[in-house]
Length: 226
Image (cartoon, rainbow, N blue to C red; front, side, top):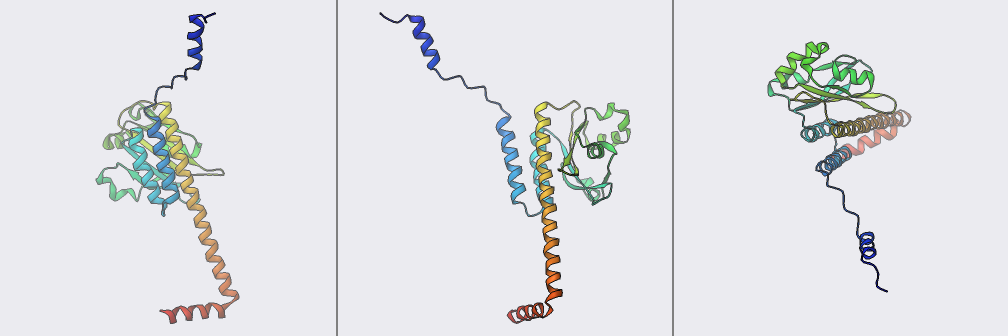
C-alpha cells in the first residue's frame, strides 16, 4: 500500500537539517577584537604597549572617540594615565601629569565602587558640572568607566568616551566588561613579573653575600672575556 503523501512530507521535514540562525554582524568582529587583545596580553614586552594596543583596538570597535587607562599608584588614592586613545595633540604635553583621585569623577567612582559607571549625558548631570567644560573641549557627551578588578583588589579603571549622548547597548556593555577583564589580566601579569624580578634580585644579593669569592671570580671571568 503506497505511503500517504502527508506522511512522506513529514518524513522529509524530519530528515531536513534545522535552519541556521541569522548571522550576527557583530559577533565575528567582537571575537576578533578579544582574540587580538589576548594575543597582545601574551606577547607584549611592556605593559604600556599592551594597554595602548588594547585601547587603539577597542575604542573604534565600540564607537568611542576617546579612551583612557588609569592605573593606581602603589597604595595611594591617585591614578595616573597609563594609555590614551584619540586625545587631541594639544593635550599630549599634559597627559603624563594627569591624575585621577579614587572616588572622584566617573573613573574614580568606578574604582571606589568596583562597578561599571555610565554617564548617558554629561551635560544633563548637575553633579558633573566640572566635567562639562572638559567634555565640550574634547567633544564627548557620554562615557563609560569600568574598574580593572582583580581577585583581591582593583588595579585602576578603563574609560571610554562617546560623542553622542545615550546609554550603550547590552552588547557594547558586555564587550567593554570583557576588555576591562583582559586589561586586568595584563596588569596582573605585570605585577607578577615585577615580583619575580625582585625575587631574582634578592636571590642574587643573598648569594653574593654568602659567596663573595665566587661572585668576584665570576666578575673577573666576565672582564677577561670582554
